[in-house]
Amino acid sequence: VQLQASGGGLVQAGGSLRLSCAGSRSIFSIAFMAWYRQAPGKQREFVALNTNTGGTNYAESVKGRFTVSRDNAKNTLYLQMNSLKPDDTAVYYCNTIPASLSWGQGTLVTVSS
Image 1 (cartoon, rainbow, N blue to C red):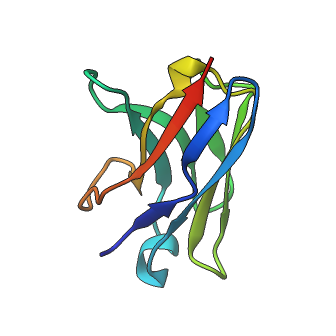
Image 2: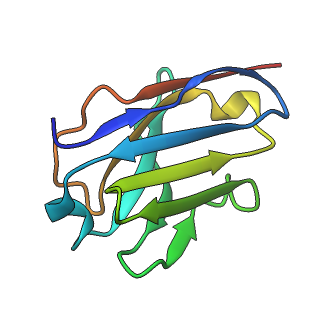
């Protein structure tokens, strides 16, 4: 498995979760990494981007609420999610951008109202 996302769970609206994505050094040293999500019945969509020099970009729907970061020493990408909404319910995945690796199982985030 090249990338493994974890940290999902059930949380009430307004709550927070922190997702992690562990990978190999060869990926994290050169790649722009991103979080994506797929809600039930919807297509997978971009959530947040982190460049290998720390630059970030976010989907409009999560700006101001989510923060993407990485720890290159640990080959890990993070997504801090605050002020969660029911619309954030989805399976969250990490991948390069553009996505070039297998998607893996992702991690399920469920936000209850």
